[in-house]
Every structure is written in C-alpha cells, then in structure tokens.
Image (cartoon, rainbow, N blue to C red; front, side, top):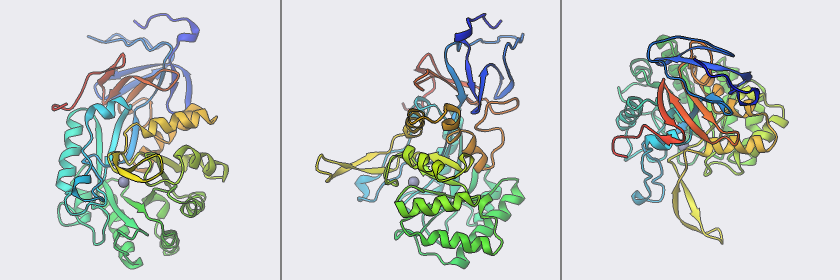
Length: 383
Ligand SMILES: [Zn+2]
C-alpha cells in the first residue's frame, strides 16, 4: 500500500514542528492519521509518493488584499484581485482577505463574494470586516452582527496611528474592541481587532491603556506592519514580550527592512517565536522604483512573499519548522482557528510537499489536490 523506501527518501514531516519521517492519511477534508509506516485499505485510495520531499501545512496568509488593494496613486493604480493559481503556486491554502486604504471604491460585499469564490475553488478563506477608517463600516450595518452572522468574518480591521486613518480616540477603540470580543464570544469565534499600524508609536500607548483598563489585548488585538519603522519595531517587541501577537509584512511597502531580518532581530530581542506571524499584504500595491530610487509606477505585492521569507529565514540559520510556524500554525492560532495551520489527526487537510529548497511540488487544500508534480491543477474559472 505504502511503498517501501530507502531511509533517506522518507518524507520529512514539519507539522510545523519537525516530526521526522511520516505518512499522512487524508479522507475528504480531514487528516485521519499521521505517523510512520501507516497502513490503510480504503476504496479508491490514492497513494502519493512523497519520498525525498518535505511535508508541511499549507501556508496561512492572514492579511491579503484578495480583491486588490492599491489606489493611493489615483484610480489607475487600483491593484487587480488575486487568482486561485497564484495562491496554489505559493503553497498558500489559507487566506484572510482585507480591505485597505481605498475605502471609497472597494466594498465589503465584494470582499465577501471573493472570499466565497476562493472557498468554492478549494481555498480556506476568511475576512475582516470594515477597512481603514473609524467609524467602521460593515455588511449588516453592525460590526457585531457581521462577526456573528457571517461565518467567514473573523474580526474587524482598523488603521491606527496612520494619517490616512481617522484618528479614532481611546473610548471609540475601546468600544470597538469590546464589540469584537462580545460578538466573538457569542459566535464561538476568537474575535480579532486587526490593526494596521501607521508610523505613530502612540498606538502602542493606546494598547497599554486598553490593557490597563482590563481589556484582553493579547488575545484579541493583532497589529500588522510591525516592521514598518525602527520605532514601531521596538514598541512591537515590547508588546510581544508582554504576551501580545505581532505580524510582520513580507511583501514590502509597509516594512523598512526585509521581514526575515525583522524576525531574526525580534527573536534575538527575546520575543517568543509563538507570538510572531508573517503576512504578505499581497495584491496591495508598492512603488516601483528606478535605479535612482525614483517612483516609476506601482507593482502588485506578490503572494509568494511569505514563502520567500521562510526561505530567507532558513538561509539565516533558523530551523525549517520554526520558520514555517510563522506562516502556518501561528496565524491559525492567533485568529483562533483550531485544526488549521497544522498537520495532525483531525486537522483540516491542507498539506504542501516541498523540495528541500522549499519549492512546492504538491499542494492539497481541504483535501483537494490543487498542485501535483509541480503542475497547478485547480485554477479560477477565468484563468
Ligand atoms: Zn494591507
């Protein structure tokens, strides 16, 4: 059933913790069993020979402009939406869609439709309601109802400390955070306040104040763009050492250095690895510069930025399992989605097989074979 293989050709499992050699048994959308030397007899069972490859959870990207971001250079600079095949090519099986700066021409219903379209193609897809501004916007005209009534909605996004945000005051953010927590509790979700950090470090003073008033900041507040400036990075490290979750952006634009360097410096500064996630900001726009550093237009932030950062981290000496955790287990854990981002019995069947250079050759999402032998099998219907 499972072919006999020489010792060095066994599949090395990173669940994302390194587990050594293993087989993975999948039925429908679930992982039924994980371990060495599995045997199983099931009708029409397909055996994938993964000898010599690394098996890891499908990548989880918790901040992606799936409907296209950009627009900050005028309407010609609106970025296109993401295609299913781009996600598959990068080994991304789980994504949380987000709206961005363009609060005028981009709508939440469009985001929900896109998320559901991705799900219909086999991708695990969620979203945050609202966008950049305060007061927040919603589909049902209530943030709490969005979280409660829309299964895909894991929380709310807001921009803080950013001149394009709304300079919302302490009381407003406390009320929003409280709504998120209550609606999360009532709907059986974690309830996340996903914060786009601007350049102003006072946002972390606001988090401290929320904490002082008894709000469970570490459980519900997830700030992103934590490497956008040296000052924000320093405050984010303090925040994470006190138990907070922090997210570094891998796709450029909202980062002052490569994300791998931020992660290595955060770890050296005593931030627990479990507190860190990486997200791409993909399909947002970043400036395209000429050789002299002048802006020559825009380019779309690539979906593959998380995987490239994992490669960079491994190149910098981080063990593969630790590097993979930032884009698999940790984001699922931080968003409160059990059974996602891990390879274990009962988990959702999201599995990537990589070469030792971390090039995906096989991608399974919710039990569906999306890529096999390096060939993308599932694309969007217009791709
Ligand atoms: Zn973004």
